[in-house]
Length: 167
Ligand code: PNS
Image (cartoon, rainbow, N blue to C red):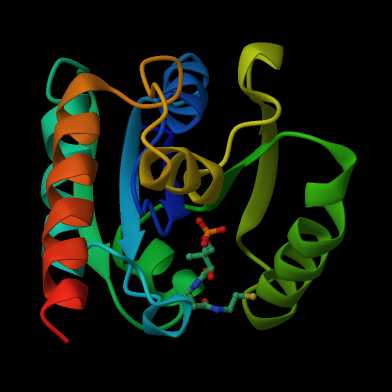
């Protein structure tokens, strides 16, 4: 059985991520979506919230598992008994970071390969950070995020705004 891990911060999961997951399902029998803690990125959602949102919006897809992980990605990949990491590539600006990460992972675990899938050109510009910025400015998120994620982002930002106005 061909197993792969699709890792990310997923803060939050976007339509672009889902597009890459669906493409990966054509190549692999089983995909584990690895939701990384990434505390250094100061995510707006907790790890548990990000994991729950990913589970919710991929519940209709077969052959998918969603798991949170802490620590090294390559250790998580081994734990999942997979040997491939999938990453989505949008534009050339992603390349430097992805190249560095793939080569570092290869250095630590030469038996694990990274493969890159191109998201649909529809999502070439889309990132979770931009979607959050649009949400903060009250913009329409339909093109960018699945409906349950839109609701969760708006709720989270409202809560954060309320907390700031009390400070
Ligand atoms: O969605 P992101 O933030 O681009 O995903 C980055 C992620 C989570 C894949 C990367 O930061 C990662 O693998 N983190 C786990 C810690 C690790 O293994 N770091 C070394 C990678 S070279």
